[in-house]
Amino acid sequence: MQDAIIQALSKVIDPELRIPLTELDMVGEISVSSEGVAEVEIKLTITGCPASRRIESESKAAIEQVEGIKSVSIKLSVMTPEERDALKIKLRGGKPMKHNPFDETTLTNIFLIGSGKGGVGKSTLTANLAVALSAQGLRVGLIDADIYGFSIPGQLGITEKPTRVDELILPPVAFGVKVISIGMFIEGNTPVAWRGPMLHRAIEQFLSDVFWGDLDVLLVDLPPGTGDIAITLGQLLPTAKTIVVTTPQISASEVAERSGAVGLQTGQAIFGVIENMSYLQQGDQRIELFGSGGGELVASHLSELSKTEVLLLGKIPISIPLREGSDTGNPLLGQESNDLAALAIEQIAQKIAGTGRELAGRRLPLSPR
Ligand code: ADP
Image 1 (tube, helix red, strand yellow):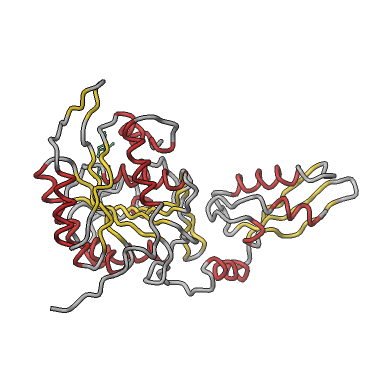
Image 2 (cartoon, helix red, strand yellow; image 1 turned 90 degrees about the horizontal axis):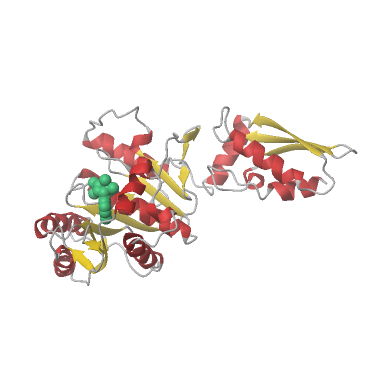
C-alpha cells in the first residue's frame, strides 16, 4: 500500500519547482489502517508556502485513486533546515550556490530580444513566443530584463511574488513558462531608479539565485536601446543569440539596427529580425500603417555588419486580439486562435524551437583592438 501511495504521489508535481513531490523528498511518513484510512505527511519546503493548498488537494486526490484507500488525511509539515539544504543541493545538480547555469557550458538555447525603441511590441512578442514554445512541449524560462519598462508579469497575468527557499528564488510559472521580472521585487508601480552596478547585480541574481531547472529555451526581454543591461547580459550569457524587433518604419529600423549591433560587439550572434505591426488586414486589403521595408532593411544591414546572413524571421500584423491578450494577462498564443498575428508568431516559435544550441550562437572570439 505504501508503494502504491508513493507511486500515486510521483504524479503530483510541485507547481513552483515543476518536479514530482517524490523526487523532491517531500513525502514523509505514510500510514494506512486496516480500514483503508491513509495518513500521509507532506513536507513543504518553507512555512507558509503559497502552493501548499494546491499540493495538499492534489496529493489527496492522487492517493484517493489508490485501490483500497477509503479516506485520506494529509498532514502538512515543513522540512528541517538540513532537509532543505539537501534539497537545494539536489536542485542545483550538485552545483554550488551563486553559480550562473547559463555560462558557456549551457545546453539551453538562449535568445536576447531587443529593440531600438520602446513600444514596438518587443515584450508582447517575447511573452507570446514563450507561451508558444511551452505549448510545443519545450521547457521555457523568461527573464524580464526590461528593468524600467517591465510588463511581462502583467502580460502573462502573474500577480504572485516568487517564493523563496532560503536564498533560492522560485520563479512563478504561467502558461508553463518560468518567469522572473524585476516587477516581482518592487511594491506597486514604484519607479526603479538604479545605477549600473545595481542593475548588474539584479541581473546576476536572476541568473544564479533563481531555480530554473533544465531549460530548453531561455528568452530574455531586454530594455529598448543599447544600454548597460544588454552589455551585462552579453557577458553573462555568452551563448545567447540576439533577436531584434522593429516596426516597418524606416526611421525606426535605423535605431533597431544599432541595438543589434551591440550584441555583435559583445560577441553574440544575431538570430534574426522580427517586424511587428507590419500591416492591418481589412478584408482583402492590407493597410501598411507604418510604411514598409523596415524589417528587410534591418536584416540586410545586420547581415552586412555581421558578415553572416541575418534572416527576417517573420512579419506580425497589427492585431486587436494580440493587444487585448497582453492587456488582460491572457496571451493570444495561450488561446485557440486563427488570428493572423497568432499564426505569424507560431511560425517564428517553430523556427526558434528548430535551432540547436550547437549549430549557432557560439561566442565569437573577441580580438582586442
Ligand atoms: P515594447 O516591449 O517594445 O515596449 P510592448 O510589447 O509593451 O512594447 O507593446 C506596446 C503596445 O503595443 C502594447 O499595448 C501591446 O499590446 C501593443 N502591441 C504590440 N504588438 C502589437 C500588434 N502586433 N498589434 C497590436 N498591438 C500590438
